Structure formats: structure tokens, C-alpha cells
Image (cartoon, rainbow, N blue to C red):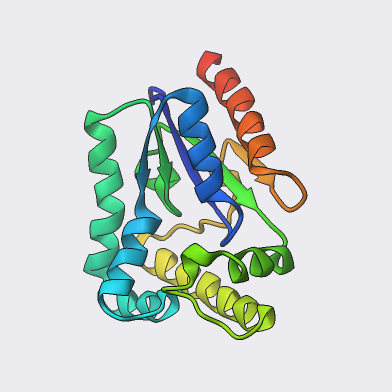
Length: 187
């Protein structure tokens, strides 16, 4: 399989994918393809939280397939971009596949204070946010396995795994770029 100048960025909820992908696009001069943003917009348009929409999509797998197939289709005619998507590594296997991990307590705190999430995630406490994130994580894992027979949390699917719990998005991006350049130069 030939390598493409594409980095697929997957990871735990609130692991920093969005911020890291912004930094990567700036540093590399790459474009970006975001499945998660599209997913959130669909949820918002249907007046659902992202968790409610996850449950809805479980009963409407054609929506999930459409979202995931769009990344693969985009990659057929584009290069030099970042895929910010849970299954980007699966949709575009010739990409440099990165998974961002984060401690669930840190993730819940990040998500709770993220003002950009408030229109699709609104909770009274960090603990409520955490419980919802655990539920969403499990819903996604079950849905992806049922639809695609893959486990996104299986770290053997990735070329690089980075724990973002105690490092900044800039440090994460720098590590990704370093390893990505090595990967591009490998035969």
C-alpha cells in the first residue's frame, strides 16, 4: 500500500484532536477534513445532543456509512491534509494513523469547560459530563464494531499513540510531525 501525505487523527473524547489538528494544519500547510464537526452539525440540526444522535445513528447506519465514506472519497482526490475523524485510519488506511489518549477525568474537565461544546453537550457538573462521555464512548465502540467490525480503541491500528493528559496540543503536534516525517521516509 502506498503512503499518502495524509494524517488521520483519532482518539478518545476530549483528547485534543481538534486543537492538535489546527496546529498541524498551520505547521504543515495542510488542509483539514473533519467528520466530527459534521456529526455535531447533524445532531444540532435535529435538536439532539451528540449522545442522543449517537443512539439515533445506531438505528440509522446509513448516516454513519455516509459520514465515514465521505472521508475515503475525499482522500481519493486530495493529498496533504489532516483527517480529524474517529475512523479516519480505517477509511484511509494509507494515511499516517494517530490515536490520542487522555485520562477520562481530564477529558471530562476539558469537555465541561469547552464553550464550543455547549450547544450539543450541556451538563450541570463535570461528573455528569464524564458519565455521558463514557456512555458515548461505549455507544461508538459498539456501533463501529457492528457496522465495520473494527475496534477504534485497538491501539495496534495506529502508527503512533500519544497520551495528551499532561502535554499541550503544541507538544502533541510536534511529536506527530516528528514521527510522521520518519514514517514518510521509511520504505
